[in-house]
Image 1 (cartoon, rainbow, N blue to C red):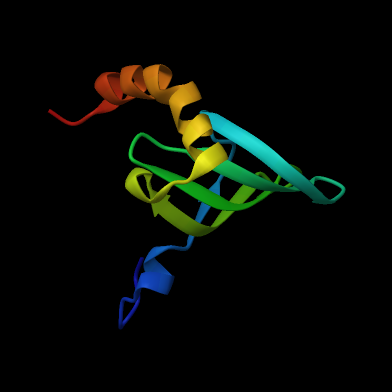
Image 2 (image 1 turned 120 degrees about the vertical axis):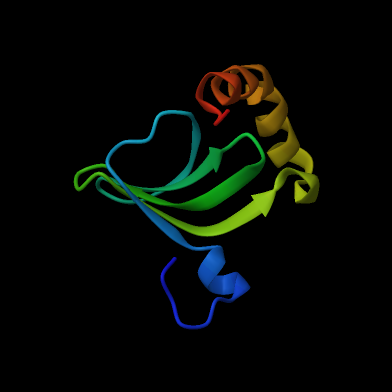
Length: 93
């Protein structure tokens, strides 16, 4: 992110426009069209909110896979093979 002083807090937040494809788990509905979500990347899980009307996703926290616990690990294990395949398909050479 483009900031004068980078911090862990700033580095852990991100906004993504448009729909994201991947392993997404809805954990709560905040309001009509706004959901609390967990999103699994190859090497991390992100937690935040999705506005399906405006097609905006806001990540408030990101944890590396080695920091995950209990059901978060189940979520990772469930998606490990598809994530490996996506990673191989799109990684930089």
